[in-house]
Image (cartoon, rainbow, N blue to C red; front, side, top):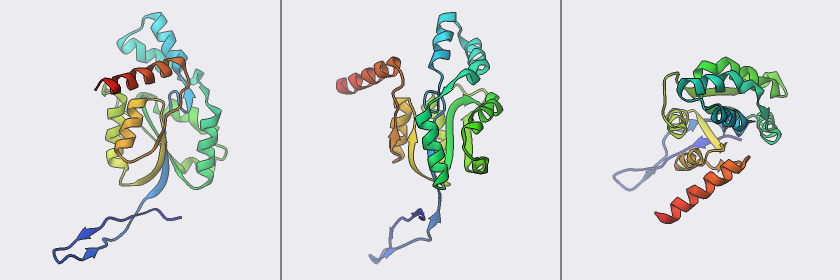
Length: 192
């Protein structure tokens, strides 16, 4: 199936013109932490150890390979790869651990021929912006290359940002902490 993007332009004489079509690659967006794999336990350990600032992220980066994957997400990724989709891993992880992250993800792909259909977009090394802002910056560029069928992301702020781009978002709830965050988000919506 071809994903052709068309927009209509009205000329001054009232005729509708069709501009040349722009071909985009069909893709899905997949978040890594608490979507593709579970990292909440690392954040809990960081909190218990009282780590902050750079020590917090050093600990996180050193421990990301201890994560368990979410089987449902791995199945989705493999199924969409088999259907010919591009997989865009969009994460707030730092580019410092790009190789570590790719080395973690790739073995879960059923067939390595798909490695060319997988891309990884990450936080720049010194960027301290919120995750939704980092992902928004990437999407502003990627929207011209890909037609996104949907996004998978555990963070409600990221899901709302995807919605603003017209991308449906699946927001998995993997922990009690996420349920509490959703309750807070919806309570704040009712107030405003």
